[in-house]
Image 1 (tube, rainbow, N blue to C red):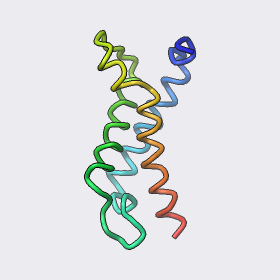
Image 2 (cartoon, rainbow, N blue to C red):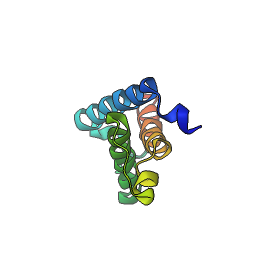
Image 3 (cartoon, rainbow, N blue to C red):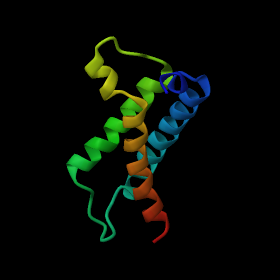
Image 4 (cartoon, rainbow, N blue to C red):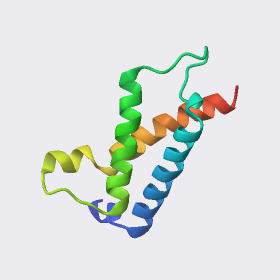
Amino acid sequence: MNHWFDNRWVRGATLTASIALMLLITLMPRGLATADGSAISHGLLSLVMWGLSAGFVYGIGFVPRNPLLRMVFSPLVAWLGMGAALVFYVQYFSR
């Protein structure tokens, strides 16, 4: 399974998704709001930003030597964090 994570296409897709989501959050921050218009919790926003950071780290191909940092910036963490942000934007655009 680790061999699958080292694929250039997977890294490129993750980096592209990170850049696209970063631009979306920068240009339309209102999408990260709840249904009543209030902002999402700080903890949830931190998880989204952690996912974006992990997406950038994994996408450019950096592999930390420290096993803890390798886990913190793993592609699974990146995809989960970016997926959470994507859920908020899908809900925002479907209102």
